[in-house]
Structures are given as structure tokens and as C-alpha cells.
Length: 280
Ligand SMILES: NC(=O)c1ccc[n+]([C@@H]2O[C@H](COP(=O)([O-])OP(=O)(O)OC[C@H]3O[C@@H](n4cnc5c(N)ncnc54)[C@H](OP(=O)(O)O)[C@@H]3O)[C@@H](O)[C@H]2O)c1
Image 1: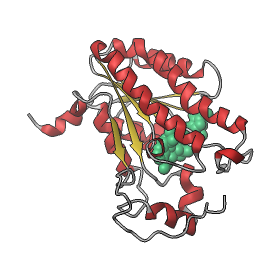
Image 2 (image 1 turned 180 degrees about the horizontal axis):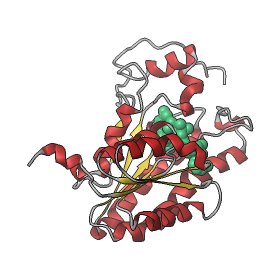
Image 3 (image 1 turned 120 degrees about the horizontal axis):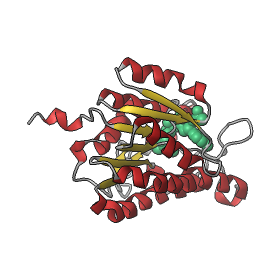
């Protein structure tokens, strides 16, 4: 056996949500590298042009489906449309997610006591309710596959205390819980379900933090590896969980965070600048 073949997914039919940029785009490319045809989704079709090009450059088929996961019924439509387009589904990486955002698209960072209920509701709708709807819709398609893998893109924010991002963190923790419950419930139907928990990763979503000195310095001071991740450092985990390399892995939350979630009890003693949130 060539162990590298364990990461092959030749001919597999994959759906990657939130594939227009960042982690989702990189996951779609990685799955195409491994041999998957890929349905890619975002809110607007044109946002997926680069991803489609990247998948096709790898010799695989790319299909675009668009929809806003904040809207009722969209998650199920995307799943059913993906299965119809590819003749079934073997791999689903549900990656689309959001932070609370202001009308101009900038992230809203506020402690719960100052955050608006409507922003909590929006994050729960997109990150959690749409995840449940997507999983529900994916079940019959994955049950028909002999190599079914569902990966939920959670976050280290769901594993550690994440002030100023309580809604986001709560939904990401819920995704880990959902992955564990579904893994047990669907195991005898041959469907593996896992969560991937990246740490702070440089993408458009985190540009507000990675681009500014004090906040970036403070965040990375809590990361034992002492820096931000690149998307390329996250996709390996998604490919592993999707592939036969993880054929006996289910109900797992794979943490790719530079050590952030490792409890060190403060013993490591890395110097930490004062929190920019101290006055909040
Ligand atoms: N970056 C990090 O540090 C980090 C860390 C841990 C976990 N994560 C998680 O990883 C995932 C990807 O994050 P990222 O940093 O790559 O984010 P990103 O660059 O902001 O990309 C988010 C993706 O989700 C899609 N999306 C957002 N809201 C949507 C909605 N309402 N309906 C449909 N699609 C929607 C976006 O598509 P549009 O083109 O429609 O905007 C985009 O493709 C998220 O679930 C995030 O929570 C990120």
C-alpha cells in the first residue's frame, strides 16, 4: 500500500460551501487535487469565478450554486442541487460562516452585554440553523455513498473563551456538538461526521484583526506557535477528514490552531501585551 493514496478521492463528488475565498476556496482546490468534482457555493455566482478556474485547472469538474444561507430553504436547495449536478454526494465540507457584521460589512466586535440581539440572531441563523438544515438535507445523499464524509468548519473559538465574539463562538461550539451527535447517529449508515477547528487564520474574515498591530499582536501572543495560520495550513485537516486516511475517524474535532487551545495554565509565560478589550 502507498500511504499517500489514502488521501486520494478520485471520482468523489464533493460540495464545499463558502468556497468563494479564504479557507473554503482552498478546500475546494485541495479536494480537486485529490480527484473530486466539486460543487462550490457562495451568495453570488461571480464570486466563485476564481474557484471554478482553480478546480478546472486541476482537471476536475466545478459546478456553481449560489444562495444566501440566511434565507430559509437555501441550505437544502444547495445540497439537493449539488447532488443533482454531480449524481450524488460523497463529501460535504460545510465551510460557509460569518461574524456579526455592520451594514457596511465590517465586523461587529462587542461583548454580549453590548451586542444587539439581531446580530446574535443573524449569526445563529447562518452558522447554526443553516448548518442543521444542510446536514439534514445531506443525510439521504451521503447515506447512498460508500465513502461518505461530512466536515463542519467549526473554530477554536468554539473551544476556548472568546470574548467579544460570543455569538460566533457559541455557534462554533454547537457545530462541534452537532458533529459528535451526528457521527454517532449516522455511523451505522456509513457516514463519518467530523468538525475542523482552525485557529486564527489570515483571510478576509480576519483582516480587521490581522491587519492591525496591537490586536494582531495580542491575539498571536496567545498562540504558542506565535503567529497566524495560512489557509494552506488548514486545508490539510479538511482533506484528511474527507479522505480514506480518516476512514476510522468520526465524531472528532480536529484542532489546527498553533496550540492556542492547549491549556498551559499560564505556565508557558509567553509575554502578552495588554488586551485591547480591557476597557470593554
Ligand atoms: N479565518 C479564521 O481565522 C477562521 C478560524 C476558524 C474558523 N473559521 C471558519 O472557517 C470558515 C471560513 O472562514 P474564512 O475565514 O475563510 O471566511 P471568509 O473569507 O469570510 O469566507 C467566508 C465564506 O462563507 C461564505 N458566506 C458567508 N456568509 C454566507 C451566507 N450568509 N450565505 C452563503 N455563504 C456565505 C462567503 O461567501 P460570499 O462570497 O457570499 O461572501 C465566503 O465564501 C467559516 O465558517 C469560519 O467561521 C475561520
